[in-house]
Length: 178
Picture 1: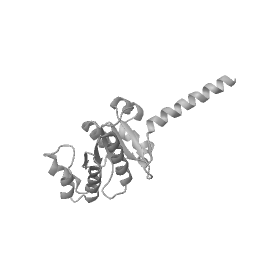
Picture 2: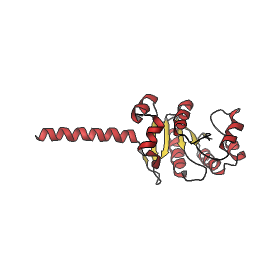
Picture 3: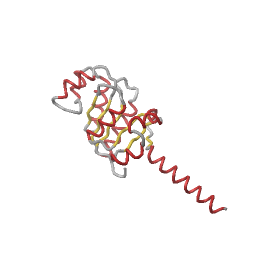
Picture 4: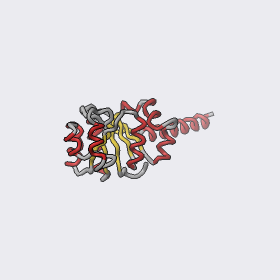
C-alpha cells in the first residue's frame, strides 16, 4: 500500500499485554489522520458489551460502552488515542477466531491491520487470510503491519517482495559471472 491508511484495526487485549500495538496504532493513526478500532478478541464481558452497544453503534464500541462493561484497559487505550486527536473506538468479538478478524476488517473497510509481531508466525497469517497471504492482501487492498514489543513496525509483504527481488538480483549477478 503506497497511501496512508484511512482505517486501522489493531489487535489488542484488555490486560495490556499488547499495549505496544495500541501505542503504535495510535501514533500511526494520528500521523495518517486515520480512524482506529482496537480489536480485542477473547475479552470477558465483550459479548455483553457488544450486544448492549450493537443497536446504537453496529461494528464498534464507544468509550462509554467499554467503561460500562468493565473493560478498563481497553477504555484507557481508546481514551489515550482520543486524547492524541485520533477518532478511536474498540470492538470485542464473541470469539478469538482469527478469520473473524479478517472478516471484521473487511466489513469495516479497514485498509490496515496491525498485529503483535508474535502473531506474524506463518500459521496465524495463513489462517487469517487463507491460502495465499500475499494474494489476499493485494485483492483486499489491506496491509498488515507487525508491531514489535519495542514499537518497531514491519510489513511482511514488503519484506517478501524485497527478498524475492534480492534473490533475483543475486541470481542475475551469478549468471553474469559465469
